[in-house]
Image 1 (cartoon, helix red, strand yellow):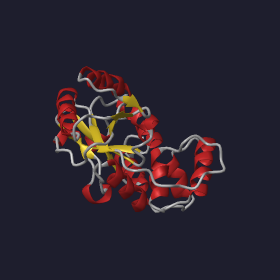
Image 2 (cartoon, rainbow, N blue to C red):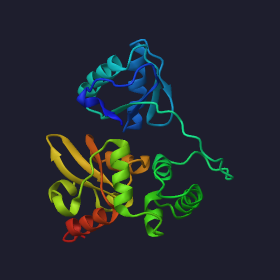
Image 3 (cartoon, one colour):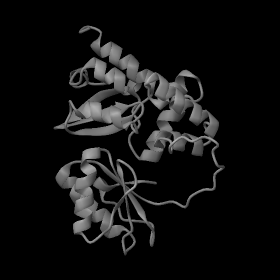
Image 4 (cartoon, rainbow, N blue to C red):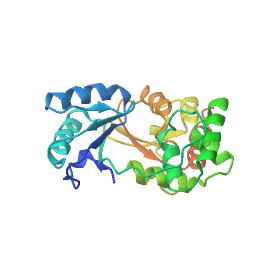
Length: 237
């Protein structure tokens, strides 16, 4: 399970590679340079991921990243690289699917064929992958949200039960939030917790961050996000 570097938990795995994941694309190069100054050789594995192979059991790596998180106030996840599972080759020519798709296939909620179709449909309609899967009833909302919460080690927010702070929610324009399938939930000092239906979507994260400088990413069910947005903005639209 991924470890929240802000908690500075000690490493449990030894002698293996680690994945370091940030939730801001502009922070990746800064964190990479920092790790290089520590004598490590981080290698990019995506727009938000670095791969590092420390000489020890990973404890020093986690402590160093925890210090970086405290200074920069940017969430980082640290997790050992798990052994790859054998998979059947795909007959398609698609690029590697977004992480959300890989997670859902791995947990058996959808098949590889269904994922490839949904990716094509999402590109055609300019929608989030999760939206396409839900609209076509290929997955249930709670399965999608709780899978993301578990695998990404981010909070799951039950909006219908906990509610949202209307003043905080209106910090971002309605159109941006509906397009991003996201809603600001509450604030703690200068940091705002934002619930996303698909927190792996870089465009959605970037759109919200253009209005909020410091956010903590959470996940919520798509229908709850949309219902809450309509309720919060009903008197101002």
